Length: 168
Length: 166
Image 1 (cartoon, chains in turn yellow, purple):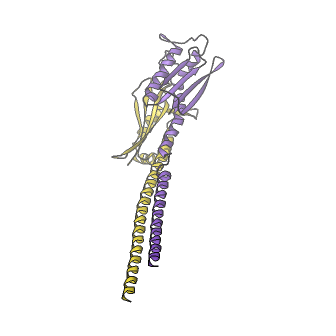
Image 2 (cartoon, rainbow over the protein chains, first blue to last red):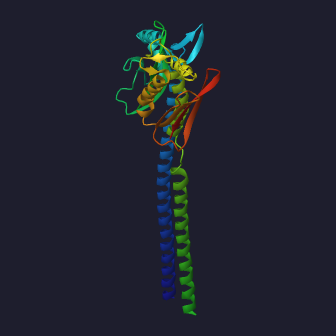
Image 3 (cartoon, rainbow over the protein chains, first blue to last red):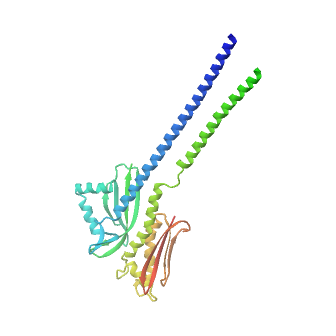
């Protein structure tokens, strides 16, 4: 009788041990799985945020390349891929008005936009919009070849429109 | 009898351990699957921005320099000089250089200051003119963005072609 009792007790202990081992392994796998899933999700969300920033950069670059305030026009017909230098200078001055500057901040965000003449007189740089994020970490630079029209001399020079979008 | 019961128990235990091992193997396979298809996706959005930029770069570059007023006496534009170069006997002289030589030099300067400085591989050609213009930088054998720009000149069509390669 006592032997049978002892044997039963041993069986029960073995069964308990088995169940505990299964539970330990199960929770171990669960924890590994969860931590891996969280890492993958974090990585995936990071990529989505990067993607959204890139799309925003493309949008801002497109808006800056086709600003009607700066485009060359003849008899009210706008000319693509051409900026009027006198309009650039006037636009720059108009941004001294804080309200106007804030309006354009809504459009261009934390970016820097400028043009640089390369031919025939290299080195002339005109800033169009200047609002970089202080202490920025990332910057996405877009370069657009552009014609620069001088209404006084009626000449076209070759330049580059730079759009630098800054972020944390 | 007792030994048969023990053997039976041993087999059961072995089967259970086998079951656990199979679960572990399935879990590892699942993890490898996730790593392959989630973490190693080929296309990223920064490539999208680059591809979008490059698709417009060739077109914007040609459109911009065609309008450019050159240093050539008479303030001729690049388009005018190309049209003159396309004639059987070009008439415009830019100092000591013919219109073809001057256009070649001007476009070369512009491409040096832009595409070459930005580390791009490119090939630029103007065909059907008295002195064919061919400017290139690097080996242009991979994928490319191409812009063709036709100009009417001397009763024919002169084609400018710019390939920006990646």
